[in-house]
Length: 408
Ligand SMILES: O=C(O)CCC(=O)C(=O)O
Ligand SMILES: [Fe+2]
Image 1 (tube, rainbow, N blue to C red):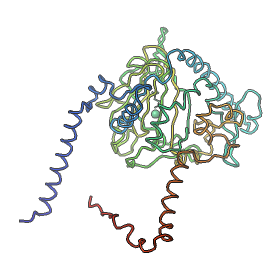
Image 2: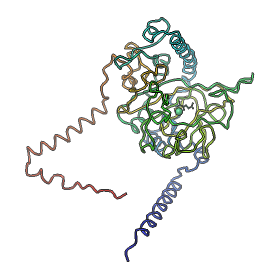
Image 3: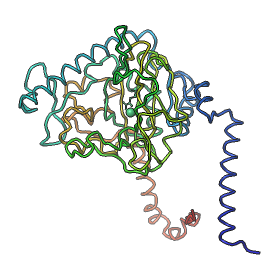
Image 4: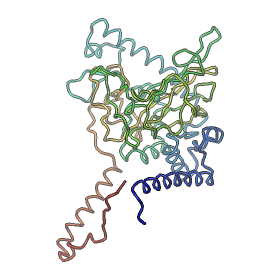
């Protein structure tokens, strides 16, 4: 007897549940943690920068796909941490002073073009014609750190997940003060509460888009429901050890594939309250936390340990409009530019990822993208060559190709 539509629907439901059960069992047998506690205890999201590439790359790519994040341990050697930390602390003061001067100058009614000519204020021309100069990229204050930013253990993951041609669209410091003895509780907003969060997802999945309703400062966001594709990676380079007490980032493992969003107007979530299954990553100084921009995550609001020193960067594939909007976003961290001299001084391996930030550099696609285009050209020409060499074979050359229209 043929099954009715209702029976077929029930059968489909049973099969879907069974597949999900089988997948969980397979993960179980393979020792893949599927609970936050198991993930936290095992640090199955972390891989050493100097472990064999096949293990590290596959491990990180799988961790990003399954949990929405991974950590690469020991990217920066121990003996260099102290220097980089000092550099990043010094940079904090320089960055703050520079932006304060710009903001004050604007309040006094000066234009950005005028301020750019003021000694001691670091503004640089941007690539877009007719747009005001912007605050210089923080990388100019971090030459020692710049030597590690394009570390092969990191770029290989970004390439595997995003695309062959990468852009570093944002780069800034993200230190977190420690609680001090005079009663200042420390923490990102100085709130000091360990039961507080600031859940969000990152650009280009930041629903508030920095400027919200202001067209001058809204940088754009992918609309909900987000397609199930990784469009951006946020990286946090920890220069101090981080754990539950000293500035470790909060995450909700697996949330990058949940269609709800902490800031989603119809999703009924409070951005400040803990979420069941949330956890803090742990990492030693010199490690890099990498997350899918869709992952629900938060800076810790408390820090009872030492001051956290960290640098954040946001990486994109070349085809994302990293800098097309927010014409008035003069102090945001989006695509902060570099002069020709500053670009020339970057380490060679970093230049391709930052070339888009230097308006006097004519940006071209990177070698891996060119190689793939060459391969595509060969394939396309092969079809036309066939027409020349074996015209009788043209009609049947695609006989083995069949496309099925999917029913789901
Ligand atoms: O401070 C952290 O741990 C997270 C930073 C963050 O969420 C961001 O920069 O987007
Ligand atoms: Fe974030």
